[in-house]
Length: 141
Image 1 (cartoon, one colour):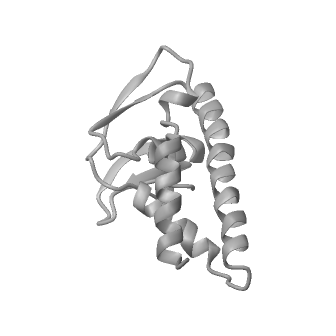
Image 2 (tube, helix red, strand yellow):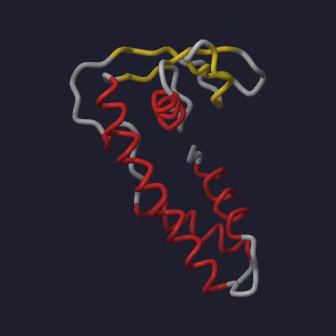
């Protein structure tokens, strides 16, 4: 099996399992604030006056948030590049992010474990995980 075939098989496996939807599958709240987004890839920019900036890859500012967890929430919720997302209160943001990250980490561990079985002498597992996540539009901040 080649690395390209390995990547393809994992993409198929994860797609058929059904990747949980963030934030919907990780939130129980009913009160939200609608945040408009540009429908593009987003990045966490610089910290200004204790607030984190969310930017597009070309550097355009999108929004400023109060903490790093809220910034990660927006990046995770932007997986399919929506025009807007619903932001719950800070407690729900914390709960959602702290539930989502172990879920994503478990996927990473499964891929790396399988990679080491298939390619025991190779050290490209991080690159392979990154490529699988890139193709599935999954981000782990």
